Image 1 (spheres, rainbow, N blue to C red):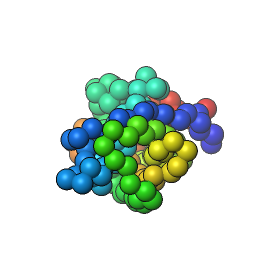
Image 2: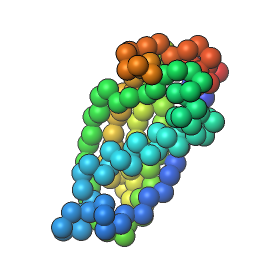
Image 3: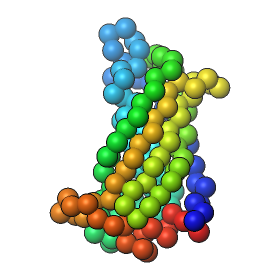
Image 4: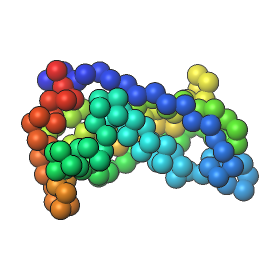
Amino acid sequence: MSLNNLSSKINIRIYYEDTDAGGVVYHSKYLNFAERARAEFLRDLSLEQAFIKEKYKVQFVVKNLKVNYLFSCRLDDQIRLVTDLESISRVKLCFKHIFYLGKKEVSKIEATICCVSNTGKVARMPKSLYHKFIN
């Protein structure tokens, strides 16, 4: 199996709402940013989440997260988030998110995303959807 080797890159400006009282990005905001990046990753494949739900009758949900905070970001920083699909099967996608402030790695998130039916039960991804991710 070979992946399409797509990588989503988004830039994020840190606003006051993203920070704690000390002006440091609140730890849970990185999870929000990663969710946004995965949505853009799918959008780059012309796979908006509402479309997946309607056409393929499945949804993607977070099963597992591994987060490593390496450095703090602050109010008004401009960070870059690179998202790669590390592996895929018919039941899960494994993403790696790396946050950068300039050239410095700020945080890393590994996210395991599972496929569920629209009724919320674990499901296999339809082959036609699965093949959108691989060559």
